[in-house]
Amino acid sequence: MTLEPFGARLRHAMDTRGPLCVGIDPHASLLTSWGLNDDVAGLERFTRTVVEALADRVAVLKPQSAFFERFGSRGIAVLEKAVEEARAAGALVLMDAKRGDIGSTMEAYAATYLDKDSPLFSDAVTVSPYLGFGSLRPALDAAAVSGAGVFVLALTSNPEGAEVQRATAADGRPLAQVMLDHMAAENAGVTPLGSVGAVVGATLGDAGVDLSVNGPLLAPGIGAQGATPADLPRVFGAAVRNVVPSVSRGVLRHGPDASGLREAAGRFADEVRTAVPES
Image (cartoon, rainbow, N blue to C red; front, side):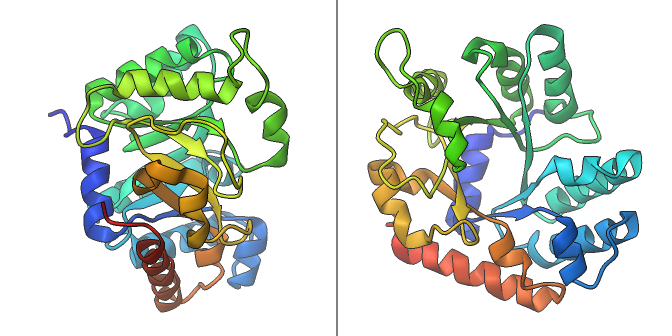
């Protein structure tokens, strides 16, 4: 049975649980700070604790695939279980995989994360468009079939991104704007929110592009990277209500106690509610 479109499910989750995405990023240093070994057992304990503490209350959980992949098949098994349990508890799962390729390879990535029969099926996945937006078509089509979403890298929070994303296209637009315009076309006429989102760093100051894509705007950089919820209206302007602020270390460093994780996530969610108007 096809799910309700991701954009509609995300809008409901943000309105009822608060507009917050918490990353599941099991850095070796975080495992150590939690008193865990940097091995599969430590990975599993860390991940289970985060899911059990937060999946019943935050809108989105965002596991970073690379931190699981580094442990091989056993790490992927932990990731599969985390996705299943987080979704069962009511959180939307955004797989942070940043996949991007062409042809049959992109089709395989799409099948991995966006096919409901896949053990890694997620509510949405991050993708890179810098082999050309058209290269994402297999992922866009697969997401539409399954009711999932796709978050496309547009203006990322890392300083190095500007040399590509701010480059000028042949028609004079910044390359990031070209990608954003493609996203807006994909979401045209969709209510209450399109399912093709953009990744735009909360650390950018003035984004300098048109962010009215009628889809969600994933905003990494809150917390450890220096941005705060109070920065969101300045960065995102009129599109701020569609922003999904993403926090990882700012919440995770409060573990391993579940209560610490919940309190930190709750504080960030309250700060976002204060900074972002409801309508």
